[in-house]
Length: 609
Image (cartoon, rainbow, N blue to C red; front, side, top):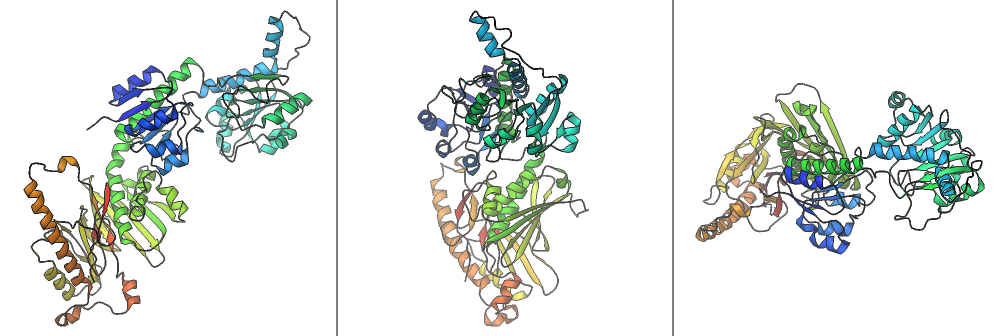
């Protein structure tokens, strides 16, 4: 197996390079690439490790044909087009804990510097002045600190502030009352925070909801003499408003480490009174640089080598311990989704995935996304595990995930139901021996069948004639059924029978035959005559399967009247007639070909009559 290749395009600790190599990845260290240079080589890599300099744009991602993961050494990912990455199936990770302490300490440092006018006092003293009476400061102890955002960094700021006897109030929609009590902070609304806080420190990501959260209007609501600290992201605070209010005296001081445009070589804030600025130094410590580099290298290597996902912004997290346990269930979920998706010939309204038994105790979010991928793939080739939930949401498909604690006939079961305008159909699967996927129920009919790359799936009235017609029609030299299964709900009800032909058809025809791609290693280059024979046989198989499908779908011959199909189209729809290709089978009164899961290329469905 080839080693995954990783490109480090920004300055990172050399220890990160060592970690990638030690874990079994091939790594190139090329910081400082121009955008055009990066686009020219990105197709060669499965992983891209960055800091803030590299811009992961939609244009770059369009060229990244093999890219699987982008790792941001740090917290902010505003230099990554997250929407485009998701659409391309690229997992985006950050390292939210590696520089949390460093950034929190910098916020506290700016609070002290602003409160005691350290920067101005330093400049004055070194200029030979001794303006002792000019720089009258204020204590932090017993002042009220208002935190906008109380997550990883905000909570550390709260702990440090409480340590110097500050009262801490926090506005954060995601902060629970229990967590607030644990931290020793008071949870408040933004409207409550503004007039109460002596210091306001911002610790939120930059989103549409948080952009300009400290607007001019909100700053005017703040207490006169307030001091503003921003070590989070430029764009969270109205910089022009801060300057005006510093000049007017409504704001007593401000400390900024981040700016709307960086590098900030010219900013409206510069030159304002009682202002302390630093050039985005929040994470600029030896410890933080080492921590984020090591963390991003470990996370990316885990994902590329084991499938474990940590600190992802567009995928459910999967621990290294869970990854091997989930692997066989991911395979089952995709096959069930592919089976159900190929059965569906109208717009999907809802998808429900139910988990029973041991699988219900696992992290099922990745399984749900994989099942959804299988369902949507027959309709949309570009769907992948990362973007499947987004596509479902955009198409108005309601997705439900349900866990059951009830006892089942199997150790674990996954049931997938697809609802359209006409019907709701379900398929249920399990693992035999903990690793072999099996179908155990289709549309409420219990059955036990293996998944295979090519299958015929047939539904018919439970009468002899269709079965004999099918048997006679498929009794041809080029059709060899490796296995066959049959089941029914009850006597004289509808029955179902998936079977697995040895030889699949090849040429394009109708809609939904899928087949895993054949790898180069499987091709026998030393036997061209065998390949020619195989082509002729497959051509015969295609023709014979078409005839078989037509024979099974059309009304029986006169001497088989007892097996006639319902003439009423409404009844046919109600009974499930007209089903087509599915995962690894085809369904309906006709026969159709399909394949289950895996890496697909589109091939024809054989749908007779």
